[in-house]
Length: 191
Image 1 (cartoon, rainbow, N blue to C red):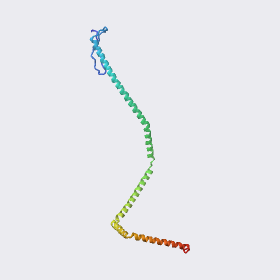
Image 2 (cartoon, rainbow, N blue to C red; image 1 turned 45 degrees about the horizontal axis):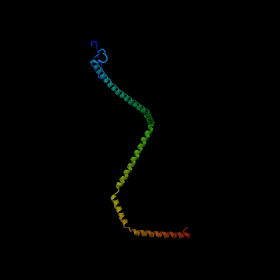
Image 3 (tube, helix red, strand yellow; image 1 turned 180 degrees about the vertical axis):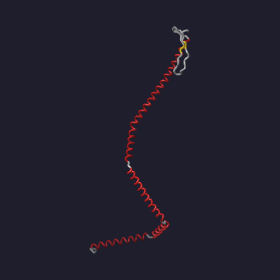
């Protein structure tokens, strides 16, 4: 063991040095020494660490691909919105600006004058309504109700059958008078 070297191996996952293993000169095939067994164990540990790191790197790679896909989708949506939404919005703003500029103070003053005239007319109409309400309030409803009651009493005292008989008699008289006028017209007594 005079020719042995100490080798320290550092694993990337934990960054802790692996204990030094003495390396002995090659031995004939078929003979296994204690240092070969330690080397085999160390190689198994290194292989396990390597497999764990490989799995971890695959997961990181998959997450990075997923992030890239999300970023591309976001960029495409942003480009679509910029292409489809922004131009109509700009057109709408330009149209609104043109309409505001088209309004001149003369039309605004006319609008204000018309509004003032409308307010004046409304005020006049309201005062007329107030006068009408005052007239209605001036009516003595008690006297009006008494007059209505008196008319009901008078109307209820009429004998409807006698009135209908008088109307029929008047109708008969008018009919006979009409027939007499017709006969006189035949003899040309009137005109």
